[in-house]
Length: 93
Image (cartoon, rainbow, N blue to C red; front, side, top):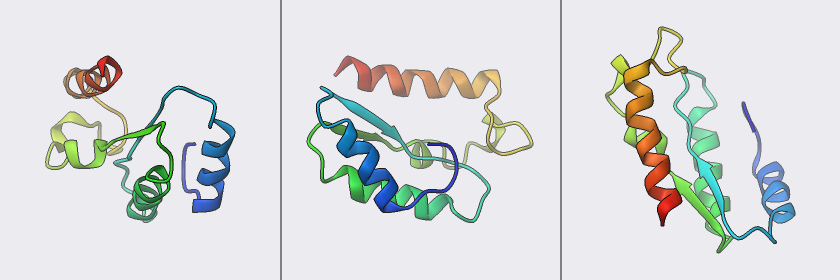
């Protein structure tokens, strides 16, 4: 999903993936008024599924504004060098 969504939409998506061995959800850092709501939905709904792991990008990127382009969303190369290892570490689990 990209953008705002509600809990029932996320629940429906994760239910459709119930047969998957593992599902990774990444919290967002975006200068939009829905950021905190979406991140709360991710954490709350994910806790209902044993095959879902949350990568808390929002917390990991806190205070690292220099990793982002002026839009506050897209990563500069140095931001990618920080983001990718977070994903790789979880994928290795």
